[in-house]
Length: 347
Image (cartoon, rainbow, N blue to C red; front, side, top):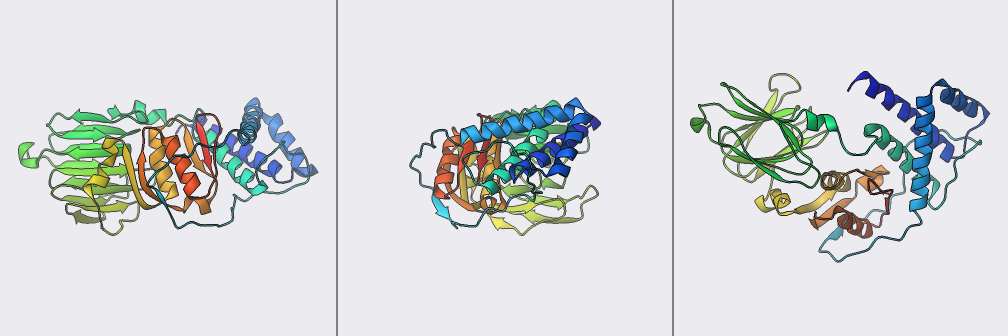
């Protein structure tokens, strides 16, 4: 991230903070003076603040649109929770506040904070173009792509995925920037004794056999083995510090500093995305949303932690992710609000 991007993030975060304060009772005199001074500092501050208020107005207007269309599904609710909403902390005041309608104060505060954070994380809400520009192979949201590498290995890129291929005389290395990838690696003895290694930044998977799937998100990744064995190691930016070997129908999840316990997997479930389906069994909503986000442009945001922890089970057709989100909202007794086709809230 360059300095310009960092500066814009800081500006948008400040705008988010001001709008969140204004929603919760408005600003007192001292806060209003501080806001006026901040706005007077630059036109970029004024533009960020105007964008924030415009986005909030769209959010309010959308709350009065027609409700979602329910559809029948085999999905069932798991762990229905009735926890109260606990929003981001904000400062209260008694001054001016932007007009609001329709939803409770705390839900609005949380949604506004999420909304404005989304503005700086991708102002056009279309993902990170740097990942695409720097990748040898990539897919668009909803796209699946089959590729044959120079050594004859076959890979299938899931939706919204990006990888680099770095083959040398010593090894065959793949770097996953983001996304879901099915690897069918040619064995070492048929590739000049070069190991087949896949890196996600926080860890590496070394193929001791042929087929495995890696699913990489921002803060964690998982490796699922379908044929033969795969050695998974943490790197922490240095030589491997911890490792284990997975057998067929085994998987492991890891993050920068944690290699979790091995758990069983089913090949049909692991590969369901190649048939346009996603299968979940008591999976946290935040992880379900991360998968759904790969099938559409824009952002799907969860406004509070209580909702993010709710569990989802079911089989979903990913040809229309919004239908699946409608079903999830109905079954979990939560609300779904779409603000333009590029931004959806669950709260």
